[in-house]
Image 1: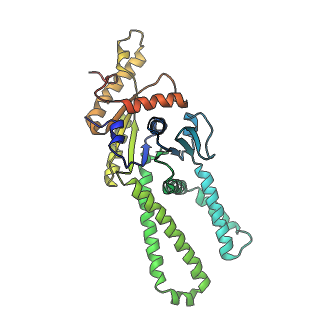
Image 2 (image 1 turned 90 degrees about the horizontal axis):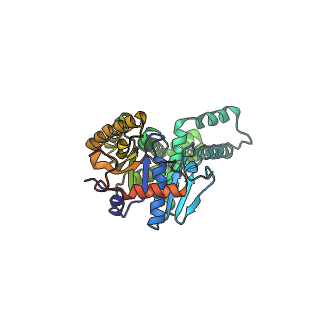
Image 3 (image 1 turned 180 degrees about the vertical axis):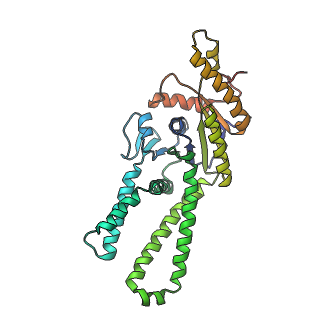
Length: 340
């Protein structure tokens, strides 16, 4: 039988970072909030539930506007942070402008340079870079027992991890070239001048700092003792195909998926009610078909099955209810979710 969520956490005392990934709208934000609630309120641990999703999903589920407004505590030990990545990029732009002015003794940034800085901020990699930076910074501080990350819905969050590897490798190559150039420092100083070398030394220092952050970020995320990746899916064909692709991507990165949460499942008992209309009946029957497929393909990964709730899972009362279901589920318990 697969490990339940409760068993998974109880058997991994070194776990530090929990990441929920999946397509938008499947319930990963709900699961992130419920996990943080369970660890903080039920287990008495200090937790940070964190997101860089511009849609401000955590603000929605906690029913308070916290986007870009720092850490908020919703219960003892339950801290929530919604980073405004665009704001971080804007701050980074200002830092670049300041450095250029200092480096070249300018009072004002040339228009062409300023336009380039603005256009660079529109690149998708800039948003990801801001996300890496925020995550690495939070983890490095070590202020919390657990960090629960609600990934933005791009490629199950796996693209984010693979991009970290790619960026790290790229910086390795650039740094290697810069270090090689240092061997010829005296000749370069004669040809290009000492001031130019000092500027390039500053660039090398910046690259090394970025690399250190990425190395730390990568090392934590690829350590199975410290990090766990959970996929949130629904019993539908596309979700199953996406999960298969995700498992392939994890394998290519030499990583292991920690578990799968099957969400939004209608109780099979509804099929026995005469007042259930054909639409809902067909939805339940469709789900049952795909639950069988999910169980056959991913049994070892299934950690919990969550119901389709009678209202939106918003506010602490509903988050507590989801937490109870998420960490109380067992395949040996009441089988409300599958036709026997």
